Length: 302
Image (cartoon, rainbow, N blue to C red; front, side):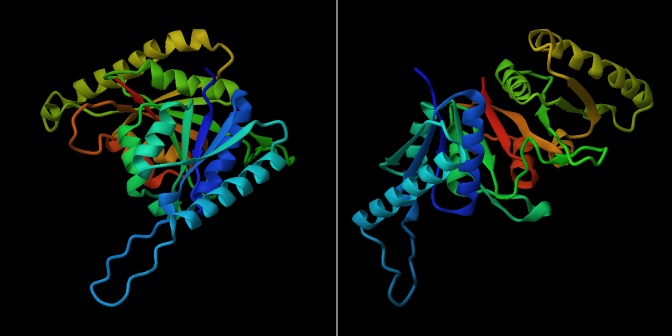
C-alpha cells in the first residue's frame, strides 16, 4: 500500500504553510498528498461565568466550512504543483484521535504550528503536542515563514541559491536506525549536506575533581570517534550524501536550535514509551519545538 503525505488543515496560516511544505515533500517522494480536516477543530469552546455564550456553529455549517476549506486548498496546491495527486477527507471524531488515526496510515504527518518570532519560536497547541507524544509515524511541524531547502543565497552573490542543510540530532546512548535513516533519506532526496549534531557532557561525579582535565580530554577524543563509527554504515549506504558531524559540549537542544537557522529541516528522535503519564517528547525535541526556525521532524523509535 502506498502511504500518502498527510497534512492537517484548519484554515490557519500555520496549516496553510504546512500544506505547502507537505506538497513539496510529496512531490520529492513521488507520493500522493492527503489533506484532512476535523470539523470539530472549528468548534470554539467557551464557558463564560456570566452572560450569554458564543453560539456554536451547527454540524452542517462546520461540514460546509470543512469542505470549502479542503476544496480551496486542493485547488491552490493543484495549481502550484501540476501532476501532484491530492486527496481530501473530512475526519470524524475528536481531533487528536482523528489525527493519530490519519497519521497511522501516512508516510508522514505534517502539522502547522504558530510562531512567536525568532526568540519564542513555536507555540505548541494541545492537539499538536498530544499527536507528537502518541504518534506511531514521523510528524513534521511547520510554521509560517519557516525556511526550506532553497532559500539561502550563494556566497558568491551571483543570485543563485544553494540548498540548506538537513540537520540531525543524534543520541549516541541509543542511536536509532529509524531516525538516522530518515535524515539520510531527506538529505539524499534534496541533494543537501547532512549535518549531524551530538551533545555530550561530563558525568556529574567528575565535576570539580582533580581528574577533570584528563577525563574531559579523553571524552573529547572518544565521542567524535564513536560518532564516526555509528555513521560509517550510513555513509556507505548513501555515498552521495555529504556528511558533517559535530560533537559539541553541552546539551544538544541549544546547538540544534542554532543549527536550525540555516537548515531546511531538523530531525530528532522520540523514544516510544508505553506509560500513560507525561508528554513523552524529551527535552531536546521540546527545545526545538519551541525555538527552532526550520521545520522539525520528530521520528518515533523504540
